[in-house]
Length: 279
Length: 279
Image (cartoon, rainbow over all chains, first blue to last red):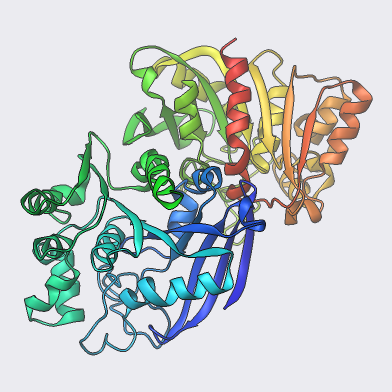
């Protein structure tokens, strides 16, 4: 892995790296914010999964998270949202399929199945890499994300009990099988057998008995994609209620789907994760 | 003036407006963050002037300022950095002259002299407009900015004693007459008589006796434009020392010219302005 950028921020460093990925069969770029305390000791990490069209850059530039990570002494890990490159299949005229839209699954269908293994990349390859190369504690991690990345955070945590100390999400796609974005990507990446889709659907995973210790979700009520039925937090809420899974779902009046919404509440999310990462 | 966007953030609202400008003879766009308290009472305003290539969007998206403005109950005003539009002269292949590079002067030379009156726009037209249309206190304002906008903040304050309660800047162009960016814009906008340039040069203004009550500047030591000699804070420091103008110039070790640098210290700047705006 090669460091390609390092920017001092809040006393820590916002670094960017490129490495050849064995999961995705291409070079992958990611960023890490290391708080100042990481100059002397290993720190826990919060993984942040971004949404459709994003790279590693959006959240680190617009999320306003680094200040809180410095305060709590935790690292932030910003992966890309898909494999990238000229050799990687894409749908150039669609923002919601292909590059920038990996949906955090392991694709099984051609032409996606060689490169689109974001699930393995996020849950296995990237943590191993950064825990060996950077001052980041082994296996003391939490996960959060936005929209498609909120879906990713929920699914990664639900499918790996004990791997993440805490999970949260902003306006996540809670039930991708039942919305346009999810159906478009799942049919392309996973094929037409909907039983296969359930394995990457937070609502279905909860219904099947998957559990996390604690779960925090913020959803703006003025979010156009919520209005369109892309996010469906009520479906997850209903599954959690039926199954006895704790869920703190906060409907935030008047907030939209943008990073301004994230910035408004990410301090509370990072404090929540820090509490679990440091206990 | 017409509101074209409103985004809820930190309990307040980040609004965007368009209006026909009498100073610039074109439609101008700006953004204002109104903290939640502005729903019930008028609040003081901090003007933020952005740097080369920016619009009103950069600082509001990347600066991380709104959180602090909400805490202190002050509005943030984000003007554009130049006149805009198909009728407005531009140098399409240059980032440092024309649209996006108004340099906060009143241009006297063709073809710039019809539209490029950013000095009048910032110091007179825009405050009158927002103080009449928005819940913003009359004449209780401060000013800050970055790079070209830092230059703008210093010049607006030095030329208008008593108009701004406080002034600060991040990596400002302190002595534009002596750097490439300033010489390029001043010769185009103001002509070849360098005596005319002195009226928009913070270092020269201090030498000529202009004063502000208080002045705070942060400059990163790893700033490539500082290394290139575009910013020249030492020249301003020397003038302030000779003339008895107070200046707090903080050289911030390892910080660059980016919004990550601004985000790291803008909380301290907003606290400083809030102290002066609310006393």
